[in-house]
Length: 134
View (cartoon, rainbow, N blue to C red):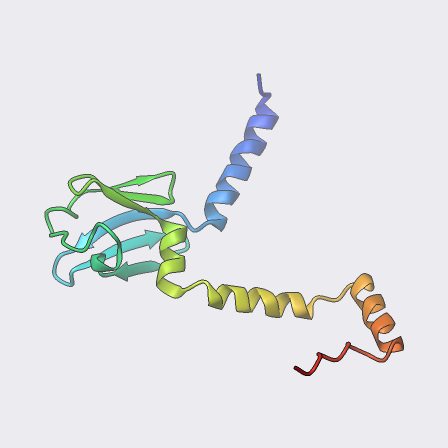
């Protein structure tokens, strides 16, 4: 059985994971604008047309009237019996490349003794090897 300290540490870790993964606090359908609106823990509201999601193309206002949030990352619309995973939705809406580009830039800027030593070794051998001409 977990001690009180272990339980408190686990609860803090869980709360940090939820914050870091921008969980959904609320989900609703705005019938006037015909948009699904998600309120994230970060304070951001994200809205998008339901037709962007597979299974939601023909959904009407009555199908989207009741949303259930599971684990802060899954949104399920009961009348429609369809749902989505919010991190996958974000990838679908904004694309995967922008994140990969930013991560690549950050990695390229990283400085470490190992990276510096590798750069010096490459420089001592004449620099980066030339690409073969085809």
